[in-house]
Length: 138
Image (cartoon, rainbow, N blue to C red):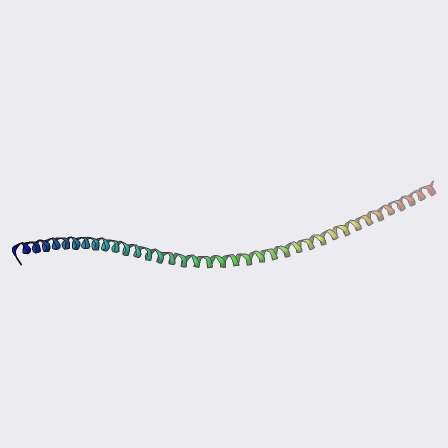
């Protein structure tokens, strides 16, 4: 190989080495960007994992509260039914007492009326006797 060919070969190698170094630098930059993106992705995945864990915990707590609420509603419904039953019994008892009271009032009214009629008859009879005695005395 002569001197000119040797220079061209060296020039080619230097140019090739320069392009190779530039390619390696671009690859390094790409790797650095990918590494940064991977780190961000890892942070995002960890945040999502933490959020999912909090959501699962909140859901567990909410489920417990819903069960408690269901039990409270069931007890309230049972108590409401018992209260309705007691109210019906009290109303029925009150009705019976009122009916008995009205019946006694009616009976008392009838007895009073009968007594008033008897008194009126006795008064008339007494008045007639007194009139009869007075007429005999005259």
